[in-house]
Image (tube, rainbow, N blue to C red; front, side):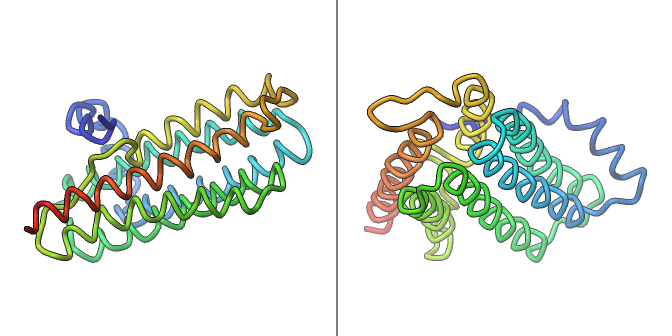
Length: 204
């Protein structure tokens, strides 16, 4: 079960934001770029949280939630302005992948564990790749699996808030951020394999 399936139910909460962006002349692509900017800032804050002051973890959490919220708003704005296009969808997905990469890079940089960061980012990228690759071979785009992007952002944001008061706590040699990266690595690859299995069965 993933949070992605609840996207249609949050549409009524989007209206004020959609109208606001439309009123100031923002385009859906512009909102996608702003969302990516939030991810870059979140990555920097996560790195500072590990290397400097733990309060930056809470800042990073807020920025991650903003990235996720704007990622929903851009699609709603495209529908409102009747400018939804394949090009916009491509830009949105490319920026989402780069956002995933930079946020995880920031987490890994903060605890200086780049091998664990590599395992996490490959799991996340493969999850997304298998979701869209299903569409490339003639199936519907796959959003299911253990953890989708909405779930991932919610978990990263929650962990960011918890990492502020628990910055010095460790369990089995890992900090909370370390365990977050372990979770992203393991569940990311399991979700990718789950999506591969679904697609493989559907193609038979």
